[in-house]
Each structure stands twice: as structure tokens, then as C-alpha cells.
Image (cartoon, rainbow, N blue to C red; front, side, top):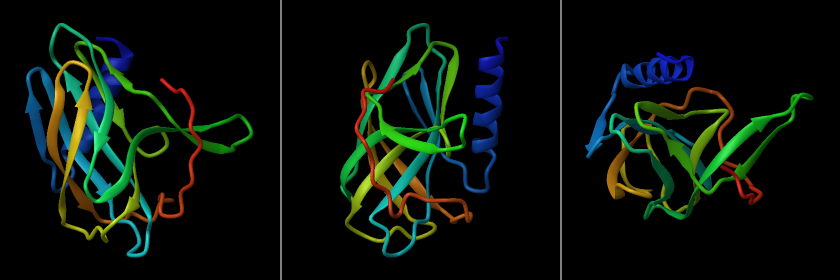
Length: 164
């Protein structure tokens, strides 16, 4: 087992064992606990997190998302440079190799929901459509989890980049 696969599985298990884990399966992809930490009531943006496991023989790629509660939805990556400066940029997609797990989490890849049209309250289940190159459009529900005090995206502005 590769170190990347072991890390991905460990992270996916951590996400899946949270108090209110939920999963969606489409073909050989398993979407594990899609969630949004509750943003402030006046927030205009929020970050979405999940793990995507690919148990099939072919790769797939998450290339987008759509949500009625946000004016714009896109995939982003946060990076911290050697000086400790964190930046965030839009990416074109996230590869999900066969037999591996892609983890979208704070400080890395995530889904940005910008221009929120409604408050997101802890316990809400909000519909989102994930868009994959091969699996196509997959409707899921993101659970609004408790805010955990870490930095959120409520005052987020972003730069566009070509990304992964």
C-alpha cells in the first residue's frame, strides 16, 4: 500500500467517523461526508469539504460543483509558502486515481460557495451537484457542521488560476 493511499484512507476514515458521517455512492466512486462548517450568519462565502474514494480501475476527476444557495461555486486550493503566507486560488479539477482517495480539507483543496443566498445553519442538509469528468453530475447533500473556530471563508476574496 502506498503512503499516499494510506494517508488518503486514514483521512477518509477520520472524516467518515465524525459524529454525523454520511456517504453517497455512484459507480465506483464513494463520496464521504460532504460538509460545510457553519459560517457566520452574515457570511457571503463558505468552504465545503469531503473525501472521494475511487475503487474502480479507471481514474476520474472532480471538475466542478453547483449549488442553488450560492451565486458561484468553484474548486479551490489553499497553499502556504515557505514564509508562512497562505494563498487561495481556483483550480480546474482534482484527480481521483483508481484505488485512491482524494481528500478535500481545510488548508488544501476545497469547494468554495460564494455569494451565499441564505444562512447555513448547523444541522442543515443542503443540496449540491458534484460534476465529474466520467461519473457526470452527482447530486449529494452537504451537512452543515458546527463551526470549529478555525479560519473560515466568510470574508473570502479569490484569485483565479489554472490550478490542478
